[in-house]
Image (cartoon, rainbow, N blue to C red; front, side):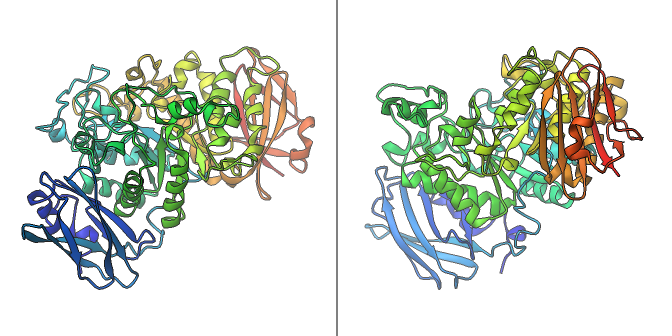
Length: 618
């Protein structure tokens, strides 16, 4: 019996894979496992010859063919295999016979499922984690031999270009796992790593052209598995960025579609409106709803019809396959609100049934807490009920950015984070939301706050002490800056990630004093958070900001942490009598940010836009 790790990398030497090259262009999924809850597997076969008359049979203990589907395009056949609990790992012989008596046997391989029971793989991410978002092409180049791959459409390699490829790869990430661990990171979210064989701007990864292949300019499938394994060995988790709404226009199944309704088709090109309101508006028109969901995200990203059962099975099986194959711990789901929401509920249920610890969180770039809550598990009495565990919490992000950029008022400025969190009653579990200050589509936080180091530090204080799962964007720890107009300005290379870089900001000596101050600020707070049950999983109590000072507490039965943010241009002195409800019984504090003991906690002083984090002591 062959184990998966010792026997195969995708497109490896197994006979079944070799036959793909002889008879089939694609077999998806290329193999499966015994003992899976998703035991009825729909295999897509694609060839350049007519498969419509192909008859497929098998005789393998514990496996039977439920149905063979011949579809509009004769280059495809879909085969439903039922894999019973009694099935053993091995080669399933699929006897394929044409009407003209041609015949051959295709061996479809079953591997034994990983036996670790979720102890070292598919761990999920939670509020105890600190996520680092990076773009592999722009983070570090660990293998210059794959900078260009012969035959791929995008042959650019120009680091001073905002849209060309720069050469970063998975080996570059592996080479800097120690750096991330030292910073205090516990989980890594990379923008998509799957093949993007597009002619222009293929670096970002969001236009898949093959769902089962890591982009060869980043590495290969086996290297991706190695990255996950090495990360897990170091106590780091891996989040895979998945795109379900659309693909790249060069995707092989777009260039030769199985059927006309594989994509959402329109008489003339129709873009999505990017407005989510019709999805929940009780007065919405059907045409507005349809254009929002079925309109294309861009003219270069064909929109998948997830109501097509073959498309739905393809996407669900692919997501299950990557978790079982590579052992990733969570999925960040791109452009979630543009997908068919009924399909998404089916997708989420299937993934969580197979991997109960897996975390799923969706990109929900909307405006308003109620619209955001609509797309996740909520307490709203509405016809559609989402089962998505968590979201990218844009409302929290907008509130924190406004806290340091907007004039203080009744509903603006430093009060905005308070008002946003006050609406958490709509979520079933707001701790599953991912909170952030910026990302690969947004202006960097250091630029947003006008390169004010005090506001920058207070923003990160909020990030690492608020409720939810904190996520930061690569390079923010070294004060990288840029405004997202265009996006490439916030997607620059991490200095030191390339062999010929003149400075290396992965090292303390390569950073300026100010950059080291920022790095150590985040590092200190992140490492304290790892040891603080209150900051990771504790309850939240917040006080209505007075005189533009926001005070809140994270606490458990054994630990209380007090956080204060000064939203003023001037220094403030604040008595703590108002907070007796949470401070009663405490006489002293450990000042986390300054690493010193505070003997008198009856009041505190804060410079303009500064913050404090006190671990209260009896």
